[in-house]
Image (cartoon, rainbow, N blue to C red):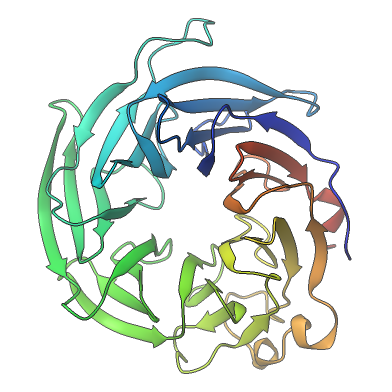
Length: 351
Protein backbone atom coordinates (compact mmCIF):
# COMPACT_ATOMS: atom_id res chain seq x y z
CA UNK A 1 0.00 0.00 0.00
CA UNK A 2 1.33 3.39 -0.94
CA UNK A 3 0.21 6.49 0.90
CA UNK A 4 1.14 9.93 2.04
CA UNK A 5 1.41 11.00 5.64
CA UNK A 6 -1.09 11.89 8.31
CA UNK A 7 1.71 12.37 10.80
CA UNK A 8 2.43 15.10 13.32
CA UNK A 9 5.31 17.37 12.33
CA UNK A 10 7.99 19.23 14.28
CA UNK A 11 10.78 21.31 12.78
CA UNK A 12 14.37 21.49 13.98
CA UNK A 13 16.25 24.67 13.20
CA UNK A 14 19.11 23.01 11.33
CA UNK A 15 19.89 19.92 9.31
CA UNK A 16 19.85 16.67 11.29
CA UNK A 17 20.38 12.91 11.13
CA UNK A 18 19.82 11.58 14.65
CA UNK A 19 16.68 10.81 16.64
CA UNK A 20 16.11 8.32 19.47
CA UNK A 21 13.27 7.09 21.64
CA UNK A 22 13.62 8.13 25.30
CA UNK A 23 13.09 4.59 26.52
CA UNK A 24 13.45 5.40 30.21
CA UNK A 25 10.57 7.92 30.14
CA UNK A 26 7.69 5.66 31.19
CA UNK A 27 5.22 8.54 31.66
CA UNK A 28 5.44 10.12 28.20
CA UNK A 29 6.06 9.17 24.61
CA UNK A 30 9.16 11.24 24.00
CA UNK A 31 12.08 11.46 21.61
CA UNK A 32 15.44 13.21 21.54
CA UNK A 33 16.98 14.64 18.36
CA UNK A 34 20.26 16.38 17.51
CA UNK A 35 21.29 18.76 14.71
CA UNK A 36 24.16 18.76 12.26
CA UNK A 37 25.07 22.35 11.44
CA UNK A 38 28.61 23.13 10.33
CA UNK A 39 28.46 26.86 11.06
CA UNK A 40 25.84 27.31 13.80
CA UNK A 41 25.67 26.25 17.43
CA UNK A 42 24.02 22.83 17.32
CA UNK A 43 20.98 21.85 19.33
CA UNK A 44 19.50 18.88 21.14
CA UNK A 45 15.69 18.82 21.23
CA UNK A 46 13.70 16.87 23.82
CA UNK A 47 10.29 16.30 22.20
CA UNK A 48 7.14 14.94 23.85
CA UNK A 49 3.96 13.73 22.18
CA UNK A 50 0.98 15.43 23.83
CA UNK A 51 -1.41 13.29 25.88
CA UNK A 52 -4.03 13.83 23.19
CA UNK A 53 -1.58 12.56 20.59
CA UNK A 54 -2.19 15.55 18.36
CA UNK A 55 0.95 17.68 18.75
CA UNK A 56 4.65 17.50 19.49
CA UNK A 57 5.83 19.67 22.37
CA UNK A 58 9.40 20.84 22.95
CA UNK A 59 10.23 19.85 26.53
CA UNK A 60 13.79 21.15 26.36
CA UNK A 61 16.17 22.82 23.93
CA UNK A 62 19.89 22.55 24.68
CA UNK A 63 22.99 23.84 22.93
CA UNK A 64 25.53 21.25 21.83
CA UNK A 65 29.04 22.34 20.82
CA UNK A 66 29.49 20.29 17.63
CA UNK A 67 27.76 18.50 14.75
CA UNK A 68 25.88 15.44 16.04
CA UNK A 69 26.45 12.28 13.97
CA UNK A 70 25.10 9.70 16.40
CA UNK A 71 22.73 10.00 19.35
CA UNK A 72 21.41 7.35 21.78
CA UNK A 73 19.27 7.61 24.88
CA UNK A 74 20.21 5.85 28.11
CA UNK A 75 17.85 2.89 28.73
CA UNK A 76 17.54 3.48 32.49
CA UNK A 77 17.72 7.27 33.00
CA UNK A 78 15.61 9.56 30.83
CA UNK A 79 17.92 12.53 31.43
CA UNK A 80 21.08 10.78 30.13
CA UNK A 81 22.09 10.35 26.49
CA UNK A 82 25.22 9.98 24.36
CA UNK A 83 26.43 11.76 21.24
CA UNK A 84 29.13 11.23 18.67
CA UNK A 85 30.13 14.63 17.33
CA UNK A 86 32.62 16.30 15.04
CA UNK A 87 34.24 19.67 14.62
CA UNK A 88 35.75 19.65 11.18
CA UNK A 89 37.98 16.58 10.95
CA UNK A 90 38.04 15.89 14.69
CA UNK A 91 35.53 13.41 16.13
CA UNK A 92 34.60 12.89 19.77
CA UNK A 93 32.01 11.14 21.92
CA UNK A 94 30.46 12.00 25.25
CA UNK A 95 27.67 11.08 27.66
CA UNK A 96 25.47 13.98 28.78
CA UNK A 97 22.86 14.66 31.42
CA UNK A 98 19.89 16.94 30.81
CA UNK A 99 19.52 19.45 33.66
CA UNK A 100 16.33 19.73 35.70
CA UNK A 101 14.03 21.91 33.62
CA UNK A 102 11.55 23.25 36.18
CA UNK A 103 9.10 24.06 33.42
CA UNK A 104 11.63 25.97 31.30
CA UNK A 105 12.07 24.88 27.70
CA UNK A 106 15.23 26.95 27.18
CA UNK A 107 17.31 25.46 29.93
CA UNK A 108 20.82 25.53 31.39
CA UNK A 109 23.75 23.86 29.69
CA UNK A 110 23.93 20.11 29.29
CA UNK A 111 26.12 18.46 31.90
CA UNK A 112 28.90 16.33 30.42
CA UNK A 113 29.20 13.16 32.52
CA UNK A 114 31.86 11.32 30.53
CA UNK A 115 34.13 12.00 27.61
CA UNK A 116 35.01 8.84 25.68
CA UNK A 117 38.41 10.12 24.67
CA UNK A 118 40.44 6.95 24.07
CA UNK A 119 39.69 6.91 20.34
CA UNK A 120 42.32 7.82 17.78
CA UNK A 121 40.14 7.08 14.74
CA UNK A 122 36.83 8.52 13.58
CA UNK A 123 34.15 7.48 16.07
CA UNK A 124 31.00 6.04 14.50
CA UNK A 125 28.52 5.00 17.19
CA UNK A 126 27.76 4.41 20.87
CA UNK A 127 25.88 1.30 22.02
CA UNK A 128 24.13 1.21 25.39
CA UNK A 129 23.64 -2.02 27.33
CA UNK A 130 20.34 -3.31 25.86
CA UNK A 131 18.12 -3.01 28.94
CA UNK A 132 18.20 -2.19 32.62
CA UNK A 133 20.73 -0.27 34.68
CA UNK A 134 24.32 -1.11 33.86
CA UNK A 135 27.74 0.50 33.92
CA UNK A 136 28.88 -0.77 30.51
CA UNK A 137 28.99 1.07 27.20
CA UNK A 138 30.44 0.21 23.80
CA UNK A 139 31.92 2.70 21.37
CA UNK A 140 32.93 1.89 17.82
CA UNK A 141 35.38 3.79 15.67
CA UNK A 142 36.61 2.98 12.17
CA UNK A 143 39.14 0.44 13.41
CA UNK A 144 38.26 -0.57 16.96
CA UNK A 145 35.58 -1.76 19.37
CA UNK A 146 35.88 -0.36 22.91
CA UNK A 147 34.13 -1.65 26.03
CA UNK A 148 33.84 1.04 28.71
CA UNK A 149 33.18 0.85 32.43
CA UNK A 150 31.31 3.92 33.73
CA UNK A 151 31.29 5.33 37.26
CA UNK A 152 28.39 7.78 37.52
CA UNK A 153 29.25 8.96 41.02
CA UNK A 154 32.83 9.87 40.08
CA UNK A 155 31.96 10.82 36.48
CA UNK A 156 34.75 8.67 35.12
CA UNK A 157 34.84 6.36 32.11
CA UNK A 158 37.56 3.70 31.88
CA UNK A 159 38.35 1.48 28.90
CA UNK A 160 37.77 -2.07 30.15
CA UNK A 161 38.90 -3.72 26.92
CA UNK A 162 39.51 -2.91 23.28
CA UNK A 163 40.08 -4.85 20.07
CA UNK A 164 41.14 -3.81 16.58
CA UNK A 165 39.15 -4.93 13.57
CA UNK A 166 42.30 -5.22 11.48
CA UNK A 167 43.98 -3.18 8.76
CA UNK A 168 41.76 -4.33 5.90
CA UNK A 169 38.42 -3.37 7.39
CA UNK A 170 36.55 -0.25 8.47
CA UNK A 171 33.72 -0.25 11.02
CA UNK A 172 30.68 2.01 10.69
CA UNK A 173 28.24 1.02 13.46
CA UNK A 174 26.56 -1.86 15.21
CA UNK A 175 23.91 -3.23 17.57
CA UNK A 176 23.89 -4.99 20.96
CA UNK A 177 22.08 -8.35 21.15
CA UNK A 178 19.12 -8.01 23.58
CA UNK A 179 19.05 -11.79 24.09
CA UNK A 180 22.76 -12.23 24.77
CA UNK A 181 24.37 -9.28 26.49
CA UNK A 182 27.84 -10.58 25.66
CA UNK A 183 27.18 -10.39 21.91
CA UNK A 184 27.53 -7.36 19.63
CA UNK A 185 27.09 -7.04 15.87
CA UNK A 186 29.45 -4.62 14.14
CA UNK A 187 28.98 -3.30 10.60
CA UNK A 188 32.24 -3.69 8.71
CA UNK A 189 32.49 -2.76 5.02
CA UNK A 190 30.87 -5.64 3.14
CA UNK A 191 30.15 -7.82 6.17
CA UNK A 192 28.65 -7.99 9.64
CA UNK A 193 31.04 -9.16 12.35
CA UNK A 194 29.83 -10.65 15.62
CA UNK A 195 31.87 -10.09 18.76
CA UNK A 196 31.92 -11.66 22.22
CA UNK A 197 32.65 -8.75 24.56
CA UNK A 198 33.96 -11.05 27.31
CA UNK A 199 36.95 -11.94 25.14
CA UNK A 200 36.64 -9.09 22.59
CA UNK A 201 37.06 -11.68 19.84
CA UNK A 202 35.07 -12.19 16.66
CA UNK A 203 32.78 -15.23 16.77
CA UNK A 204 31.05 -15.18 13.38
CA UNK A 205 30.42 -13.06 10.32
CA UNK A 206 27.96 -12.50 7.49
CA UNK A 207 29.38 -11.44 4.16
CA UNK A 208 27.08 -9.10 2.25
CA UNK A 209 27.59 -5.93 0.27
CA UNK A 210 27.31 -2.37 1.61
CA UNK A 211 25.47 -2.88 4.89
CA UNK A 212 24.45 0.46 6.43
CA UNK A 213 22.40 -0.58 9.46
CA UNK A 214 21.63 -3.66 11.58
CA UNK A 215 19.02 -4.46 14.22
CA UNK A 216 18.23 -7.49 16.36
CA UNK A 217 14.76 -8.99 16.55
CA UNK A 218 13.58 -8.13 20.10
CA UNK A 219 11.42 -11.25 20.44
CA UNK A 220 13.23 -14.02 18.59
CA UNK A 221 16.78 -15.21 19.18
CA UNK A 222 19.25 -15.41 16.28
CA UNK A 223 17.25 -13.12 13.94
CA UNK A 224 18.64 -9.82 12.63
CA UNK A 225 17.72 -7.41 9.87
CA UNK A 226 20.14 -5.41 7.73
CA UNK A 227 19.73 -2.33 5.52
CA UNK A 228 21.81 -2.33 2.37
CA UNK A 229 22.54 -0.06 -0.55
CA UNK A 230 21.54 -2.35 -3.38
CA UNK A 231 19.75 -5.35 -1.90
CA UNK A 232 17.30 -3.35 0.15
CA UNK A 233 16.52 -5.21 3.38
CA UNK A 234 17.67 -8.69 4.37
CA UNK A 235 16.53 -10.81 7.32
CA UNK A 236 19.02 -13.35 8.63
CA UNK A 237 19.03 -16.35 10.93
CA UNK A 238 22.47 -16.30 12.55
CA UNK A 239 22.50 -20.09 12.68
CA UNK A 240 22.39 -20.08 8.86
CA UNK A 241 24.53 -17.06 7.94
CA UNK A 242 25.30 -17.93 4.32
CA UNK A 243 22.13 -16.52 2.76
CA UNK A 244 19.28 -14.34 4.07
CA UNK A 245 16.05 -16.11 5.00
CA UNK A 246 14.04 -13.24 3.55
CA UNK A 247 14.59 -10.20 1.36
CA UNK A 248 12.46 -7.08 1.13
CA UNK A 249 12.69 -4.61 -1.78
CA UNK A 250 13.83 -1.69 0.38
CA UNK A 251 13.82 1.74 -1.23
CA UNK A 252 14.17 3.39 -4.62
CA UNK A 253 17.59 4.64 -3.52
CA UNK A 254 19.86 3.62 -0.61
CA UNK A 255 18.17 1.98 2.36
CA UNK A 256 19.76 3.81 5.26
CA UNK A 257 18.11 2.62 8.48
CA UNK A 258 16.03 -0.36 9.57
CA UNK A 259 14.36 -1.27 12.87
CA UNK A 260 12.22 -4.06 14.27
CA UNK A 261 9.19 -2.94 16.23
CA UNK A 262 9.99 -3.40 19.96
CA UNK A 263 6.75 -5.31 20.64
CA UNK A 264 5.35 -6.54 17.30
CA UNK A 265 8.36 -8.10 15.63
CA UNK A 266 6.38 -8.81 12.45
CA UNK A 267 6.65 -5.08 11.74
CA UNK A 268 9.83 -3.56 10.36
CA UNK A 269 10.49 0.10 9.58
CA UNK A 270 13.01 1.31 7.05
CA UNK A 271 14.17 4.74 5.93
CA UNK A 272 16.01 5.75 2.82
CA UNK A 273 17.58 8.44 0.73
CA UNK A 274 14.51 8.31 -1.53
CA UNK A 275 12.76 10.56 1.03
CA UNK A 276 10.47 7.80 2.29
CA UNK A 277 9.81 5.63 5.33
CA UNK A 278 8.44 2.14 4.63
CA UNK A 279 6.50 -0.16 6.96
CA UNK A 280 6.93 -3.87 6.23
CA UNK A 281 5.31 -7.05 7.47
CA UNK A 282 7.11 -10.38 7.75
CA UNK A 283 5.49 -13.60 8.95
CA UNK A 284 7.65 -15.98 10.98
CA UNK A 285 5.10 -18.77 11.15
CA UNK A 286 5.98 -19.68 14.73
CA UNK A 287 5.09 -18.14 18.07
CA UNK A 288 7.49 -20.08 20.28
CA UNK A 289 10.56 -18.01 19.46
CA UNK A 290 12.12 -20.71 17.28
CA UNK A 291 12.74 -20.50 13.58
CA UNK A 292 10.27 -22.71 11.77
CA UNK A 293 10.42 -24.02 8.24
CA UNK A 294 7.86 -21.43 7.20
CA UNK A 295 10.36 -18.67 7.94
CA UNK A 296 12.25 -19.80 4.87
CA UNK A 297 9.16 -18.88 2.83
CA UNK A 298 7.91 -15.79 4.66
CA UNK A 299 4.96 -13.61 3.95
CA UNK A 300 7.20 -11.35 1.87
CA UNK A 301 7.41 -14.05 -0.82
CA UNK A 302 3.66 -14.71 -0.93
CA UNK A 303 2.03 -11.29 -0.77
CA UNK A 304 3.24 -7.70 -0.94
CA UNK A 305 5.13 -7.18 2.34
CA UNK A 306 4.87 -3.36 2.10
CA UNK A 307 2.08 -2.20 4.41
CA UNK A 308 2.56 1.52 3.90
CA UNK A 309 5.00 4.05 2.51
CA UNK A 310 5.19 7.41 4.28
CA UNK A 311 6.28 10.03 1.78
CA UNK A 312 5.73 13.34 3.57
CA UNK A 313 9.40 14.33 3.28
CA UNK A 314 11.41 16.59 1.04
CA UNK A 315 14.84 15.20 1.91
CA UNK A 316 16.61 11.93 2.73
CA UNK A 317 15.39 10.20 5.89
CA UNK A 318 18.26 9.12 8.14
CA UNK A 319 16.67 8.87 11.58
CA UNK A 320 14.12 6.29 12.81
CA UNK A 321 12.83 5.56 16.32
CA UNK A 322 10.00 3.33 17.48
CA UNK A 323 8.43 4.32 20.79
CA UNK A 324 8.98 1.61 23.39
CA UNK A 325 6.16 3.05 25.52
CA UNK A 326 3.59 3.09 22.70
CA UNK A 327 5.00 0.63 20.17
CA UNK A 328 2.48 1.61 17.47
CA UNK A 329 4.13 5.08 17.39
CA UNK A 330 7.33 5.94 15.53
CA UNK A 331 9.30 9.09 14.83
CA UNK A 332 11.37 9.79 11.74
CA UNK A 333 13.82 12.55 10.94
CA UNK A 334 14.77 13.83 7.50
CA UNK A 335 17.98 15.65 6.73
CA UNK A 336 16.23 19.03 6.50
CA UNK A 337 15.37 18.78 10.22
CA UNK A 338 11.76 17.65 9.87
CA UNK A 339 10.50 15.27 12.58
CA UNK A 340 7.33 13.33 11.78
CA UNK A 341 5.52 11.12 14.30
CA UNK A 342 3.15 8.49 12.89
CA UNK A 343 0.83 5.81 14.26
CA UNK A 344 0.74 2.32 12.73
CA UNK A 345 -2.16 1.17 14.92
CA UNK A 346 -4.25 0.20 11.91
CA UNK A 347 -1.47 -2.16 10.77
CA UNK A 348 -0.94 -4.01 14.06
CA UNK A 349 -1.18 -7.81 13.76
CA UNK A 350 -4.60 -9.23 14.61
CA UNK A 351 -4.39 -11.79 17.39
